[in-house]
Image 1 (spheres, one colour):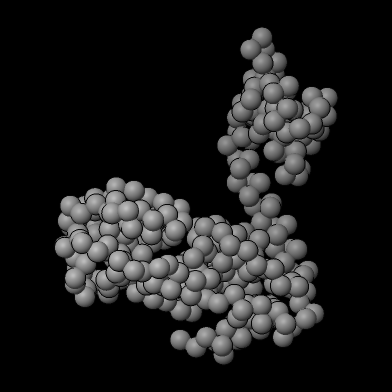
Image 2 (tube, rainbow, N blue to C red):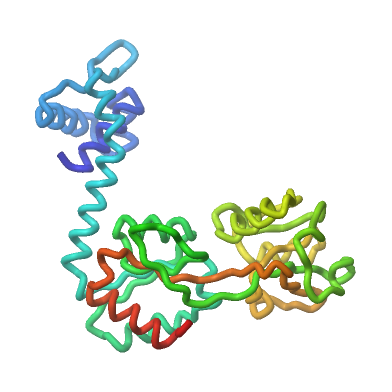
Length: 292
């Protein structure tokens, strides 16, 4: 059994049609039918029977479908881990959560690659949750994430951080203040990064602890959109302090929160791979270049 054949089975189960499933998988119905027969022979069980309405799953088919996603995930993780093990001295794949490179200079990562020319260094940005998923599934060896991560399979270390601030536009009553507290935002139109970002969840959780229901009037997927909406006086924006270096702040102001809210970057690696040479060298390099 392999993941390709299991995915073929899932498609037929969901589409209830060999033709529709074949089009979805970009293969021929004949090839798909052969894969299903091969799976049935391997398992010694009938998975479908034909009806006027299409392919209907047997009891065994329903049972396999319930288990198939977990089986595929585990098999893919095994494949990734074996590949990672084989290439542990040759390659280092790094995932960076969106926004991290505003505080963590990319030059620091690239300099490590120059110091180790025999190591193939790969890096890419992802949403914060995807960095975590790819680390756990062994698709990357090291991740830079926003916020600490309490996961038993993972070791984390704080790398850098900044204050989380309120961006106010000139003319707003809060613009003249040096700091702001969460209670002052009650009823204020607020602008936030969307749910794909750790900032959204951290901020709304802090509000909930204070008994405040934030009046979020707009959510965006990039910092430029957040800045633009605030400059247009749509509302006040919640943003990391590094925004003052990214955008023209004339007529705009970043106010730290009295509650000491922070936006922090953590490095993360799986505990069971921490002693792999490439990961160990990179972690030691980070401790040297970016001490806490």
